[in-house]
Image 1 (cartoon, rainbow, N blue to C red):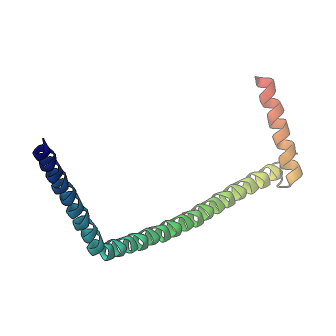
Image 2 (cartoon, one colour; image 1 turned 45 degrees about the vertical axis):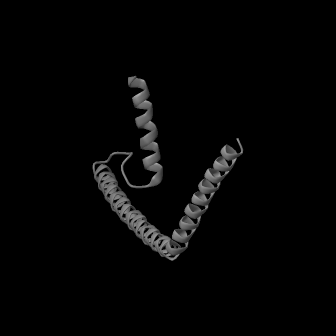
Length: 118
């Protein structure tokens, strides 16, 4: 029985030594890879920063493009409204003209007419 205990203890010591050796090897591997991992993290950080800067630039340029398009479209509609107002004024239409009051009055009349048709 004493021999069984001694054999079991020896086997347990071998397992503990094997585990300690594996842990030491793993720690050594991690210490060798630490500089590589730090460099890899730094490269990843720089890559993310570059992507963030590209997206920032993209969104600003898109906003500028959309604003320019909207301005252009609004100017075209203003010009069309002015032409229509001048044409109506020349034809003697009392709602014609390009003043804001005339436009508001025209819109009110149009809304009332639309409600009556429904």
